[in-house]
Image 1 (cartoon, rainbow, N blue to C red):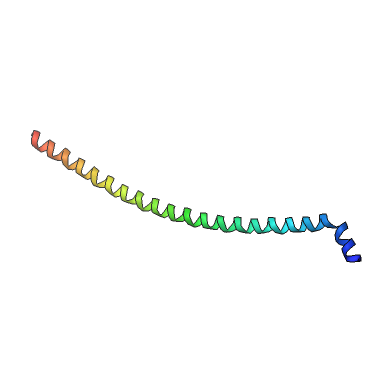
Image 2 (cartoon, helix red, strand yellow; image 1 turned 135 degrees about the vertical axis):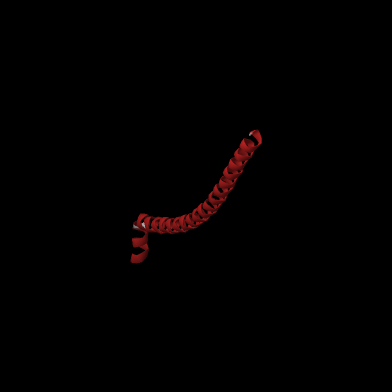
Length: 78
């Protein structure tokens, strides 16, 4: 009978501990989500770097073509 009376008098403590356990579990899931997002961001950064490198190479080729056209124009005009 003493245990039942103790539980009746300390229901708020039981609810608080349950809420605390729930909050900790939610925080743990949040950390896992952040790690997943960090992995995705790293992957996107790598893809962006690859695209930027490709675009840079194309820009160099375009500049070379422009330079060649300028030389051809100069030769034709003379």
